[in-house]
Each structure stands twice: as structure tokens, then as C-alpha cells.
Amino acid sequence: MEPVFISCRTMNELRIQKIRPMSEADLDAVLIIEQASFPSPWKREHFQHEISAPHSFPFIAEFDGIIVGYVCLMSLFEEAQILDIAVAPGQRGRGVARLLMDYAMVVAREKEAEVLALEVRASNVAAITLYERCGFVRTGIRCKYYEGVDDAVLMEKDLR
Ligand SMILES: CC(C)(COP(=O)(O)OP(=O)(O)OC[C@H]1O[C@@H](n2cnc3c(N)ncnc32)[C@H](O)[C@@H]1OP(=O)(O)O)[C@@H](O)C(=O)NCCC(=O)NCCS
Image 1 (cartoon, helix red, strand yellow):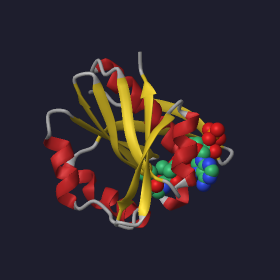
Image 2: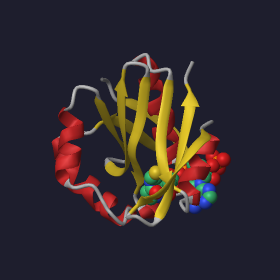
Image 3: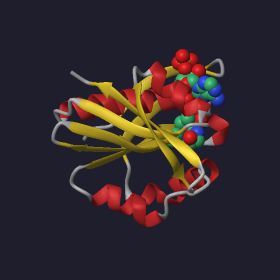
Image 4: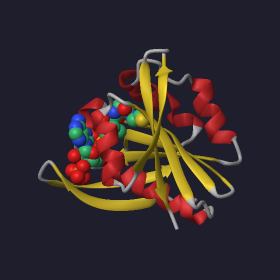
């Protein structure tokens, strides 16, 4: 899959952002963001699996050659899922996650998915706001899903 270049205005400068497939060489940078973003972060093997699995499509976003975020999409038959998304703490609030989500939705449609689903910690206001802005709706709750304590909110977007 060819990288996509997007010009965007951030912090009063025009910078070039690129979204491209994640590779093994990206994993040191990806793991730093992952560990800074989640209480139970994915390990290297999780990302290696996503890079090699036939129905998985992990992408990274770069600003000026620096990895600032990533999204892991899985798409199989009519249903796709967002398995993981994170942006480096210092790069949040600049639209990076929105670009990654928009790109994941384009790829999911290309793979002929009809629904894009995900689950998110009920207390994660930033992520729930992101998903609502992307057109996701709440479809259910999984009680005490995270560490046996926090509920998960199930969300979906109709891609048809
Ligand atoms: C959730 C996360 C990916 C958002 O990344 P981001 O690049 O800062 O998000 P964006 O700048 O693209 O913002 C997208 C939308 O979400 C909203 N949003 C982002 N952070 C928010 C916050 N802290 N509080 C409320 N809304 C927020 C923005 O207002 C924006 O909406 P808008 O376009 O209408 O203004 C980022 O906070 C993160 O990496 N968190 C840790 C990992 C995580 O929780 N991942 C989700 C797992 S389900």
C-alpha cells in the first residue's frame, strides 16, 4: 500500500504528515508511545503479529520523519475492528488520531467491511470523543472488562 502524504497546518507551521504501513523497523518508536499511553500496553510480539497477519493493517503517522502515532486495523469479511490507536503524548490535540481514523475507515471500506467496531475504556473521554467525532455510536457495555475493574464501551460505525 502506497503512503499517503497530507499537508496540514499545525503550531503555525506547514508540515508534511505521512501515513504508511507499520514495519518491524518502527517498533522501538511504537513501543515507546504504547507504553506511555496504556496501563496494560501491547508487547512487541503483538505488533509483530499485526504486521504479519493477513487480515491486519497497522499504520503509522509521521511528522517530519518522526513517528507520532499509529492505528491497528483488522478487517475480515464484513466486519472491521480498531484494535489499537495511540498518539505520542506531546503530539496530542493536533488532529493526528483523526487522520489515522479517517485513513483506517478508507482502508476498511476498500476491504469491503460494512461495519467498523471497537471497544474503549468507559473513563477514556479523549478516545470516546474522538470516536464520536468520527461518527461512531455506542452499541453496548462490557462490565468490568479492563483489569476486572473498568467497563468497556462498545462502539460501531456503519461504513455502508
Ligand atoms: C485518544 C487519542 C488517540 C486522541 O489522539 P489525538 O491525536 O490527541 O486526537 P485528535 O487531536 O485527532 O482529536 C480528535 C477529536 O477528539 C477530541 N479529543 C482529543 N483529545 C481529547 C480530550 N483529551 N478530551 C476531549 N476531547 C478530545 C478532539 O477534540 C477532536 O475532536 P474535534 O475534531 O471535534 O476537535 C490520544 O489521546 C491517545 O493516544 N490516548 C492514549 C491512548 C488511547 O487511549 N487510545 C484509545 C484506546 S481505545
